[in-house]
Length: 231
Image (cartoon, one colour):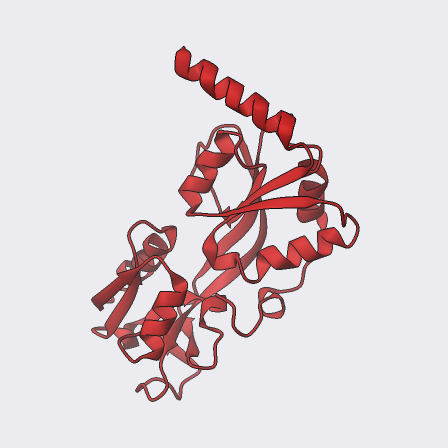
């Protein structure tokens, strides 16, 4: 009961002191392209809006939404049975193979997953949802890779690939860089990205207009949204 009372007081204080702030979460892999797109388009009509941004893994972001810490979050689809949360699909982002210049596959535009078998592989850490998605693809196609590095940071993974230390399967936006080549995958695999929010009445005055904007604002395809150095 004491913990519940403290938590209730924290939520009340947060609501009283930051009604004009949109507390927005996002998975790090969309921080350089999807988040700026929606913030920029929203501020065209609501220039006075203020944002508090938090990057984290998807499961942590859902926890923050359930705890009323964030008003909304850009992230992958929730697991079945997430309580008191809503999620709307915005787009699908393809996975690609990122290879360094001079790699044996670097002259290709598309590869079958089986063609990367036994390659030195840079994997996402097990703490990320992306690791599960990539592992599922490899298992589904019966493809074994030699995992030599694991990381939860896309910038680190890109650097390792660019240095010739291995290849990686990453979201398409993460491979758009001058020092990497991205190869389309067969079978094609993608991840859904959307916006999630909590139950009505838990958001700030500023949070509601932004949610309406993100849920209804037309957006271009991901390859038009993402800058060339996105991650």
